[in-house]
Image (tube, rainbow over all chains, first blue to last red; front, side, top):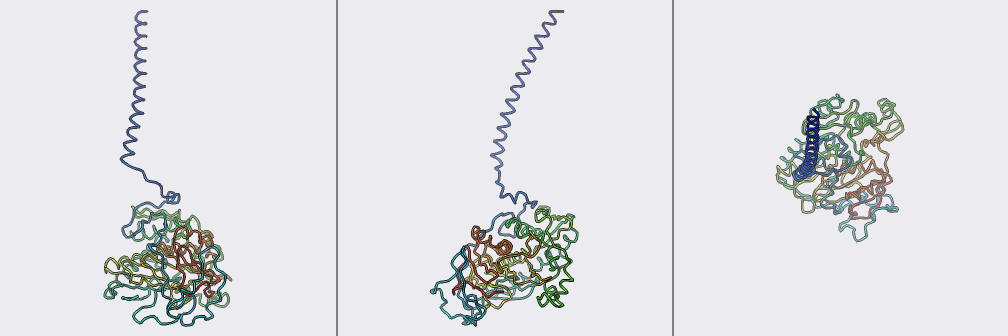
Length: 147
Length: 329
């Protein structure tokens, strides 16, 4: 009986050692495999940077309609390709076209402190006097104002 | 500008069309009218049969909407994101409480006179509930799923996409004309100007002033653009008086009341009209701090304060004649 006990205890110890060793190999293999899979996935599906905090918090889901030039998801303004240019002032600047210097235009005051100069140099005066009718073939400008 | 042109009334405002090919004018107008009609049926706050009205009438529920309405709302929400909520489509209720609760022609007729005394003011006082309006929830509470084309707004919240829809339809119409008529096009809807296709040799000439219905000789500045859009927001139009206070249609979402602002009129140029309009409206709401904001964004802008003083930023051109001051509104 004692021999049988000793034999079974040795067998058990050996089995435990084998199990422990197998466990270690399994754990090491799992870690290695996880790393390999993560690398493969990262290469296959590159990530995208979040546009902004506000975009991330919005419930507004993605899907760009075909009719817009700029995606509705775009979180930035797009300046014009070219800045507006001063146009020939057939109507004059700041005052009534046919009545330059009328009471509609108060005297000039100090310029805005933080922004670009407000006074155009004298050389920018229009070649045709304010109030002069535009050429017959040219239509008046489109008016952009509050609505 | 030479070429063809047309002008008519739609969406409660004036529409101006210019095309570089005069032979394309009739077809171009048809294209513009089609876009206007589609957007009106989807987005009008004053039509009971519009999708917007349906969503507002049954807020708190999820609605399936058309692609057009979903796009319009997507732009309105994008406007809110771009401006940190200064242009917010959930101010519909605030507009109603301020008195702008029906088509402007009807509001203006009922409140004719723009006076704080007399029958008009009495009418206005009767119409305006004696409560102050505050926006609850804000734009982030709107759940728009563009893939499923569903919209849900919390109960009690009423949408208004008027701050973006006019400029957006101008962009859509200009692009439609340029593509289908193969010519350069300018479309102005209530003074929000969009261009597409090639410009005339001297560019598209635009007079910026307080009111889009003004004569081209009104105080302001004439500029030209070759592409993109230009929009003007102003507190001098769509305004009325009530209980001794001047009201206008640009709501500050932070207070739920008409924005208290140093600017009376702001014109902005951008890559398209919708963005120009968003920036112009946000500038009215932001006040003085908008100057640095516009400069940083690189959006050329012309701002006229309540005393008539003019400020330009980000490359907006000087006038051909010295201009620092406009007539007071």
